[in-house]
Amino acid sequence: MIRPSSLHGAVGIIRATFPAEELQAWAAQPEGSAGGQAHFELGMWIRNNWVHGSGSPLATQIEKFAGVIDADQISAAIVKALWRVLNGLPCSEIEELVKPSQSRITLEWD
Image (cartoon, rainbow, N blue to C red; front, top):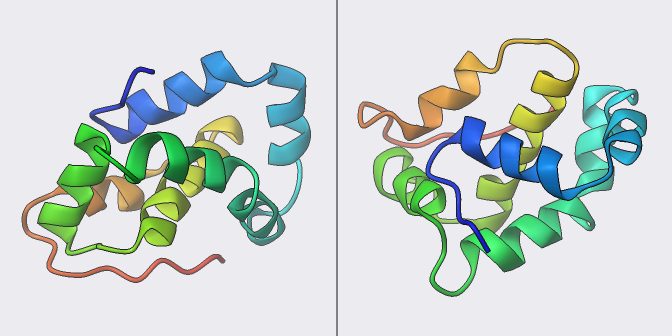
């Protein structure tokens, strides 16, 4: 299993791993609905493969620099980035998670 080192890398791995038609159907939902649905499906996959255990460079970076220690917050950041990319929207505010200047974040769905 490849473990991502960036949000864009995580989005790329997910897009290469999951069927495009399923991702597009999911992305067609409003952001809040999509985030809630993904928590127990895609979010769980992210937590099991990239956060729990040895984790991924991305999860470690988010924990260290953004102060996020909750696996749900890490998977929510990745899911939100994926939804935005699939909908052609910028995800620069999510990328702020991995910058050292961040002390703590709270992710909320729009």
